[in-house]
Amino acid sequence: MTATEVQSGSAHAAKQDVHVDGHDVKLTPFTLLRYTLSVVLLAFSIAIVVALIFTGNTRVARDANPWVALIVTVVAIIWLSMIEGEQASLVGLPPVDPDLYKDSHPITYKVAALAFRGDNLDRYLMGRQFMVLLVVFVIGQCTAPLDPTVDVLGLPAGVKFVFLDIGLATIVFTCVLGQLTTQVNSSHCMIDFVNNYFALFTLYVAMTIEFTGVMHSAYLIQNILSAVSGKPIQSNEPPKTGFTFAFFWGRVMMSLAILGFCVTVVLYALLNGYTSVSVKYPSISPPLAVVLLFFFMSVVGCLEGMQIAFFAVAKIPASERGSGIFGKKTCDILFSGNGQNLPGFMIGRQLTVVCSFFLVGSFTSLTIVPGEGNNIFGVSDSAQAFLNYGFQGAVMTTILASITWQYAASAFPIAFMNSPVTYVLLLVALALEFTGICAGAWVLALMQKKVMGFQYDEVYVGTPEDRIANNYPDKEFADDVGHLTGGGFMGHAVGSHDALDGPITSKDAIDA
Image (cartoon, rainbow, N blue to C red; front, side, top):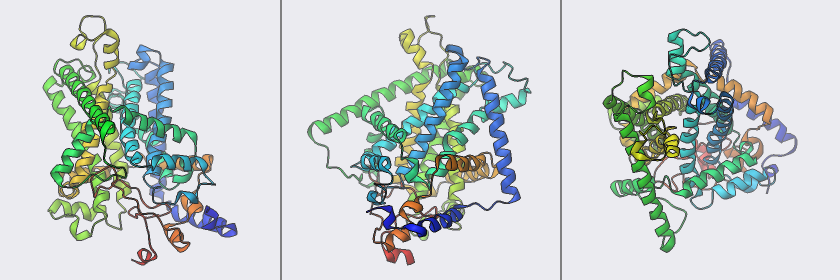
């Protein structure tokens, strides 16, 4: 069974052209202007961040040297692009029969065989969430200025404040280069995107991180929400017993201890003025710093939960999606034109989340100089040097701001839809997308697609309708495996142009 059984010969080439046309964006003067300005903004952002690095005014540039900071930033951006792109592929491919691409894409088949076994997809998503936070925090340590008074290219103070101190430049190139470009391609070129050993390696790393148990306290929160909501946790594996049960809950206890230590370190440092935010923004008092930290973490949490809630309610009748005023307003905006605003929200959401990640990094990275007798809780100098990089913030944010809110949204999606905060953040995300700050991602995605030779998935496995017609219907694959029943964790159907399409499993569904 191969992809050629779905479409072959001259029909294959002809349909390739048709599918390319189906994905084309209509170019208008306004669209071209947005693309051009976004690319110029990206180039400017990269230039001033590199210039900043070579002033030695970032943590990694100061502690190592500017070239190390630059190389680490480039490697981190490349890896982040794979982490983000692979997720888009792996949440969309499960319903498709892997035998359709087994021969043409052997590495994709290996990736799928591992990721879709048991609850491995959930384990990957857990580890991947921490990887994203960790990589973004590393980028922040390489590119965020330590002393806001240091000159960079003679830029006016206002420009330097917006692009470097607040971090707009780093936010722009992280979103465009490290996230959106590969997400654009991997959402419609899933099979090609993960057909490489870099993707397989990234999958193993994410699953290894989950296996360590650092994030396992999130599973305790998941079980609590399951009990409160009355929704069972879906699983493709038998209940844990014996050693497996003890090993799982042992890691949960370990994770709770790690999380407690991380929260304690961050709060102690904030209240005593030992964090980067006290240096960059001395007017922010310690109590206000604590409030702002949890505010930005809440913003991240709301946006993470909104993503889950939006996909979850997309699977239920329109009349049941929202009963309150704000729920109806949110649905009217989000699902107009069969979901045309959903991609716009995802882009604006990405900008807001990354901005919040970098801000959280400022609140959680420490400024204590090792060896001067001020080490937090009397830890060793090497441990203090490690804590100064703020990776404890990555643990906090992953568990408390990302994963917990995703579980909450899967447990109570309608409550999320009816919240006025959801409505406001949806408008903010759509407004950010409208500005076109990240529109250059489509230009870079086209360049990447041509250089890498990516083809749309329907070239290999057809559209959902093609697969139905050729008796290879999409498999039933619960998109809430590893989560609470009813959660929305799945991408759109492979080969579909509709943002809200799920797996199509029968010919009747085509006409529905």
